[in-house]
Length: 516
Image (tube, rainbow, N blue to C red):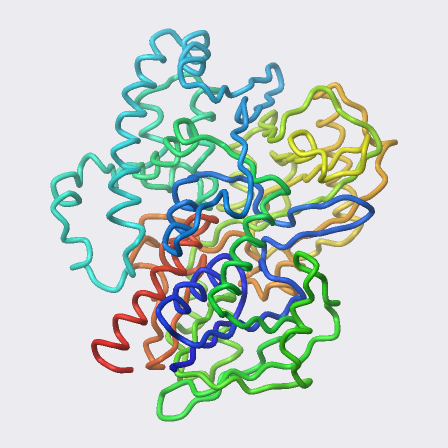
């Protein structure tokens, strides 16, 4: 049986592992942390459970399709609830619940801008087409050749896909009111760039938001991680946690072993009352033999730290020119009271989006007055906080590569956003905080070896789409492949699941058709 070793157990890594196991391979996943999930790890403390990274569950069909590949359903592993309203947006002079019901949303739009309900219908009709073509014809491609996209549906609909128009211009064509424009531009922020730099193809995200809905898996996003992990184990995948990969050994331009050492800074935790490390006793260092290696950790880190220079596909000059998605300044907050005036998801757009955007992309610096986002999972699921308590997750988008995220700086930013949170929600919480921790640029680097401390990977700009991304296969090492947010299809949880599937199929097809 052929052996594949996968570095990293985030969504893309576990996805790739499961597809490789289904294809009959002996699969080993090596992970530096004590639990699976990568950036989607879980923080358990003082009775609170926090999702440390992703907090939005969109595109439910992608998750259902993933589990269906293995004869399973989402409902076999976790319970989903559609949020209604989907989320709330706060401006300085107004706050707005975004209805889950489309007809209610049209009424809301019409109340703000006459004629916008009909235009929203037309906008969503186009977005539905883009979603269908984009998800079915584009994102499941390995991005290795233009011939992959020689599909009649793509060719005949190239202009309807709006690849060469920016999202900002596309939205402005339909809506003139600035608040409606922000509502419609917001979803592409998940793609890591400003609306003026994102192709209007990605109005498919509006379809995902408005028509497919915002959902919540009971227990939090980590329920998805646990589901994928449990499925992978059912398929025979072996996980080695608390092992940090230090080297990939090479012979004749082939990877032969993945070398990892036991880490001491991450203590084992249980997944569903199982201790992963007890299943596979291992020494302090181990060489994992591999016929194929899949890098599901940070692409840049693997290339520049685990490989000699002569075997790196992309040099420093290439990486320096990449447009990175933002990093984040995150706060995990537990309070000893229940709140009345908040929803599960809240967006705070009460300051200038243009100024904050410029401070992320054009002139990177710590933002003067940041926009921010708050997730309160305990509003939907009381089990994520002790009785009578609330679980709050604050996120400030910041530029990658920023330095100086000291405790003083993080405390200053928290005070800034806390003042605005209390003012706009009418809720006072500062004297009720019983737990507080933070996570920022330097933590993304130390915890995830993140290139420039980014949180989301490469921005999905036109010049970093499909085959213009770093390739899923090494140019220098015959049996080294990559998956995750720095390669196809791009950032986000659903794309990560797809990325694992894409790379696994590419390996299996190549291996059996041509022999590696």
